[in-house]
Length: 466
Image 1: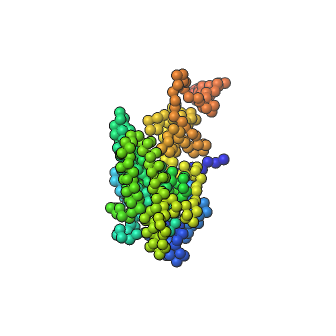
Image 2: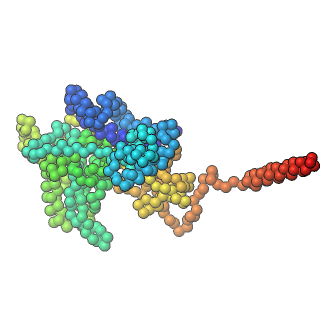
């Protein structure tokens, strides 16, 4: 069975295609608005409406796989100049010198310096190979249509149409080395319509991985949502998060800078967090595990079950009276008529995996995050791609073209171990019946002596004839 390998440029192009069509996937758009929106996107992106319709159809039929472009590596020898590898290295060097240089500028310089004839090097070709080499520009479109006034309120009519995400500072706990106090951070995803908390947890850092973990866990527990609305923090504009959500068909939208009112629901929720933190301080919580345990108790037994003023306000704005005492987030979540869309856990897990490359050493192992992982002696010297969950690196998946994925574990050194790895049968030395090298030299030596003898005989013949 042939194992399909997806290259970096294919993933990047699929991501760009999804960002183009994501506004067109809004089910609330009527036909006329959708047609006009498609025209606008085609004009701005310099792509045809036909291409956009093809991307939409591919997404609806096959999902993420349908947006992946065809692999073009097989046509390389026919379409690229013979010295393309040298040209690519020159382009990479130019990119290193001035990272802001566009692909068109790189081609202009290469042509101006006489390294390639005008018109030979195509922009799309060079851009694709730069992405594969890790030097392409990150194509991320940020949504900044936040409202300019806090007096304009909005609320989606159903659950999982929009999710708001944010990070809030937590208390300092003695969880560092030698009991040093470490700042904690709360990562939260809350449903826009019902104010139901999809996921909320305190972490010991504010790295990008905690946001990815929050999205990952929320989707596993409650299914797929349409749009995630967040600020422009580095955790929410990371390329990894954009790739993960795009593969699952989730759109990322970002608020205007310094526009906290546009994320009013999650900001209001932070007042609930403040009330909990006051109780946590009185409880003298000293461990991260206890902090999260009491936080879940607070959410499930108090916040989710109490009537929410925002829900009442929403229905009253529609002219519907809400009976006392009101509607709680849990009740509003459960009474919603929109069904949840659950995804396969393996598909979700694959979408949130990180990917890097490593070189297999002479022991058949790779080094990752200061640890050694055993791969295979058959891959000694090869550059492999690893896929891993940043929240769990006990095992990582190693991929190499033409081979089934390998599940690599951390190397555990026991009391007795053989440092020499097992060598594949194809690489083992084989006893020879003869030395082909010496046989070849003997044959060449005999031919040389024969040519020398013929030359002597010819010289003697000429002397006798004289």
